[in-house]
Image 1: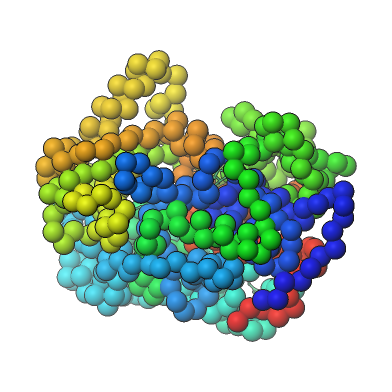
Image 2: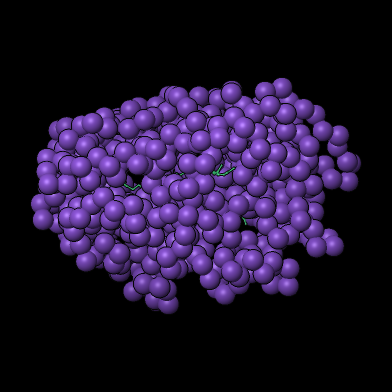
Amino acid sequence: MEPIRIEKDATQPWDAVVIGSGIGGLVTASQLAVKGAKVLVLESYTIPGGSSGSFQREGYTFDVGASMIFGFGEKGYTNLLTRALADVGEHCDTLPDPAQLAYHLPGGLELAVDRKYEQFIADLTARFPHEAKGIRHFYDICWQVFNCLDAMPLLSIEDPTYLAKVFFKSPLACLGLARWLPVNVGDVARRHIKDPELLRFIDIECFCWSVMPADLTPMINAGMVFSDRHAGGINYPRGGVGVIAQKLVKGMQRHGGEIRYKARVTRVVLKDNRAVGVQLANGEIIHARRVISNATRWDTFSGEGSKQALVDAEHTPAAEQTWRRRYVPSPSFLSLHLGVRNEAIPANSHCHHLLLESWDEMESEQGVAFVSMPTLLDPSLAPEGHHIVHAFTPSSMQAWQDLSPATYNSKKQADADRLIRKLEKILPGLSQAIVHREVGTPRSHRRFLGRFQGSYGPIPSSRLPGLLTMPFNRTGLKGLYCVGDSCFPGQGLNAVAFSGFACSHLIGADLGINPWALPN
Ligand SMILES: NC(=O)c1ccc[n+]([C@@H]2O[C@H](COP(=O)([O-])OP(=O)(O)OC[C@H]3O[C@@H](n4cnc5c(N)ncnc54)[C@H](O)[C@@H]3O)[C@@H](O)[C@H]2O)c1
Ligand SMILES: CC(C)=CCC/C(C)=C/C=C/C(C)=C/C=C/C(C)=C/C=C/C=C(C)/C=C/C=C(C)/C=C/C=C(\C)CCC=C(C)C
């Protein structure tokens, strides 16, 4: 894409300032830079990527959070990470994961989701032969949704010009998506599947990425996840997940964009009810024509529980209170970053595992345990003879608040020990093989990621119509946009990458710098 240069106003040197360098913020910034906008990213931490960053310790490269990566395919339009990198002249070398995830579920339900769709269907059908038709119907419907998404350039559906063009280009795909927008997975699953255990399996299939059961999980997102794992597949970036953010930063800088670390924004500067810049913790004021917040909506706007929001209560749009009634923060995580001797990892292990001991514990505090061992794909992430075990389990801020330092520390170690004992079900001898151990709590996630209550992301407070009520990027304040997982379509790297494409397209339309033609 040829950059289109915009005229600069000397009093407003930046066309856009982006608060936060999560994948949502970086995709917005890099896409705007490619369009020719002068962009500045302000990141409060010392590295880019937010929950998709990586950090180094004693020869290990640990992923902060994200570990199972969608959107790295080579074909179609849903490979948004591949596309975001390519647009700024970058590429991530990726390692294909032969299975998305190995489930270890109650009642001896053991299943690894094979990269090959037909193999996955055969494996699930072998366990539930009486549901052969239902299984096929349900997952085939997910493909229909995915095929609609994959058939058209994914940009901002807030821009009527884009909607008209994309409808003209792919009318059936648009109508297909419009049909699935208000639908949740549970309704579709129950239409085709009757076996209660299989319906619980569909619940955990949703929970492992949406942290919600099927009834509360939007069908569009399920179409994306349940099909992309077989279409583009799950692919791990060589060198760690943080490489994605590092390369987006590099590509953005090559297109004239800039990033500043240790630059915490404390306030969006307003003039006549319009965002005109930001103020940093050191008091510095930076002016920009457009301000984009990659902080969560709870951290961006004032409301109950938001102590230091970027926009004060007086200027917070009423729509944000409606959003807070509809969506609540999901729990945060207790996370373990372990360096272990090789002998603890059985030969031919899968990279990602999920353990659940009782169905009743699916939504409980520290109920589901997730494990990721990226050194099985990329051994260079650990010293020779060692592996990484990155484990996490949902845990809410309430369980960690108001504790004395001593109680907090002993709870942290006791809960970590309990999680390690749970993992020994699939990794016997794990506790004896640990040589490096770091424990993160919801308080650590709040502190290092700047996320409200350390939350993984927003979840519906009640049953909502699919994605219909999820806000887009424009906010009720002129000049201020949101991007990231508290925007349509929600959590997930590929989802926040979409949010970044949409946000940069919308701002591009507002600034008049978008190319006329849709991308190929
Ligand atoms: N695939 C996986 O395994 C997995 C696991 C965990 C998280 N994730 C995904 O990662 C996604 C999060 O992406 P995101 O784009 O929403 O952002 P993010 O929360 O990852 O990053 C936001 C960034 O903004 C910075 N920030 C916040 N407030 C700031 C301020 N006031 N001033 C300066 N900087 C500030 C933070 O330091 C952080 O770097 C989630 O959707 C989640 O699903 C995926
Ligand atoms: C015109 C007319 C008529 C109409 C219109 C309509 C339309 C056009 C519409 C549109 C729509 C759209 C575009 C949409 C989009 C969507 C999307 C992109 C989506 C996406 C999604 C994604 C996702 C959800 C993802 C996710 C993921 C995740 C979250 C992951 C996670 C994971 C984890 C946590 C891991 C764990 C585990 C272990 C380790 C084991």
